[in-house]
Image (tube, rainbow, N blue to C red):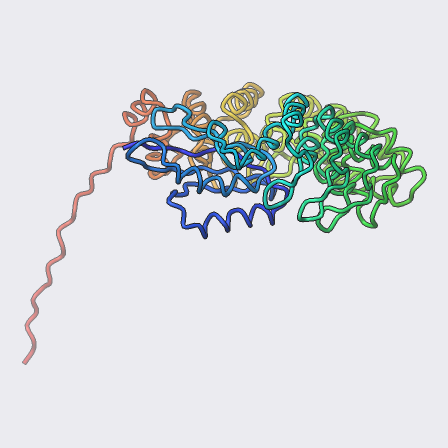
Length: 470
């Protein structure tokens, strides 16, 4: 019996489009068995299905799976056989590339929309370049704009694809633009800069997607900014490092000046780790939050952290390293070794003087943000700086206990290798630890298991027989 795994990623125009595709797939009573369907950001669908067939790849599997693919605007699905070989590829057009029937020729526009050479070949072959594709009525211009293919966008506009051609959800190619160059090309061709994506303006949607270049081009072209969305635009510009434009906007617009104090904008400035960003915020009267040092440590924003540590109350603001939001714990959770060094040099403790909810060492083996190398490097740094490997929190739990609970193989292995005290683990945690460790370490842990205490049962007291008085 052959086994085939269908796996890949599909990207949809909207959450509604993705839900509609899944609904169609489920109603088709597909013979595929779903293993996992995971949605991210409302637009990206990661899929994995397993199918069994007695002879080769059953075409029914491909046809059923294409229902998900044909509604997508990007992505690809791969079919692997039970030997790990590629049996077929399904592009976002919905049919396998190797077996594309003539009646589905239009789907080649999907595959070729990112390449100007492929588009020229299709145009020379008589393909209608402006035809809407799929149930969402997406055009090749939408696909090229999203891919940031400026040459392809220019060619499609040249052959007559309408610049404001809209999908079934009334979305134009400008909303798909992923780079400032593509957005500029579309605007120069007459695109409506005040169009909408669902319930928000294109400029706001671009800001939410962190497309700072596109936001800058739209604003410079005179796009209208809806009330209440200035902070989203300011955030996108800060992430893109476009501080000069942000300064100009804040100078001439009270709404943008107020937006600079918004939490999202402050976090964006931290992520940029640019001294100009901090000066900009402070210059327009923004008040830094009380946990600014912790945020700077979490983002690894060296410039901002150095500036914040100059304050007289910096060590107190960083916290005692015993709570989740304390600076050293946040830096350890994200493996920011340079930030941890700066904090330690300023006097921030590497382990709590009084047990609290957590500790930096606990976070170094608990955090899901760290891979094996980062986990080891962070924990090793803390131990070298004087942290105790068997430090307990307020509930008497060690870092090793947290590593076992998280099922962190690398964290548990590192701590056992460094000599963590196994006697501080419960019997249940100790058994779970053995399953996490490599064979050699697991055997050592089994060998050091505490001997069971022998209990001797005392004989039950005999009841004394007493005569009843007559």
